[in-house]
Image (cartoon, rainbow, N blue to C red):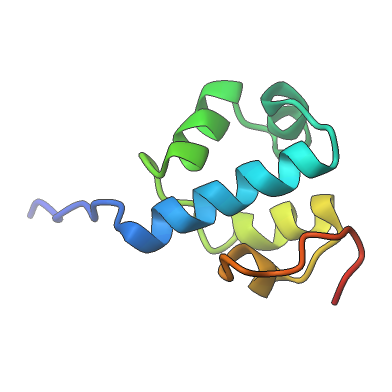
Length: 85
């Protein structure tokens, strides 16, 4: 039985944009973030473009790296200051 793969949607693109914004705010490269997550920098590029979905298990890791609440990754208008809860 073949399972249907899910395609990224607008929420995935918004989360990717948020990841990119937070990464740039803290002055981190895609390679830096990739190393901290244990993935390739190409995977980070795909997350940021919204080409690949960010898994539910990966979101808390990303939020912890940026020292932000997970919800900040979903909110396009979130305060992007480090340490804001």
